[in-house]
Image (cartoon, rainbow, N blue to C red; front, side):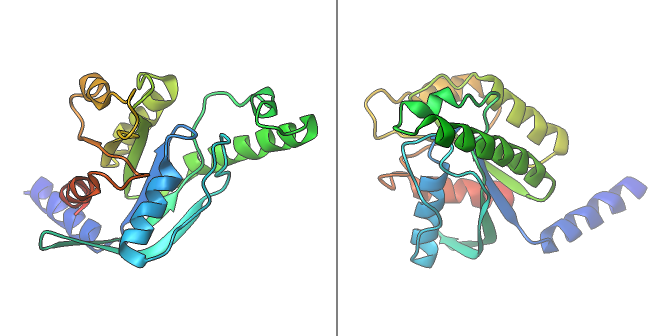
Length: 206
């Protein structure tokens, strides 16, 4: 009887809790592109800057009061676009993008702070879209660490297999590596299959 009431009331309070969906993943996996697409789809305006330079998002961007209406369902939430998660940040990686050494070192320092900030936000988000670049190997230490943290904290999440518009994309590889989790292939840049993603969000986070 105690367990029943505990579960009942925890669900009740969770339903009334403000839904905050964090976008997590590797640098340049397409998190901010997806955040912009979602924001433009439902609010008519973009959320943050995008760039080919890794760690372009070095602080958290937040868009409140996004409301998805899909196939008769509705989901109200805040978007939390977090900096890219990496297990190591080397300033030398930024030199090839035209930054000088001082700029590269400053970028690396900001990126490291951004990663710490993103991890801290796991205490506040109520759901996560884990964005993976479908052109790359998904079995990375960063992805495994993020998933392990989400499972330990019991935070529901959807894996987004992004960049399906690229010929080298292989979302099936992500599905095969993480068969126990919901995986939705999309192109955030082209807006392809976002309808399926929105329905997966409603099913997972409602």
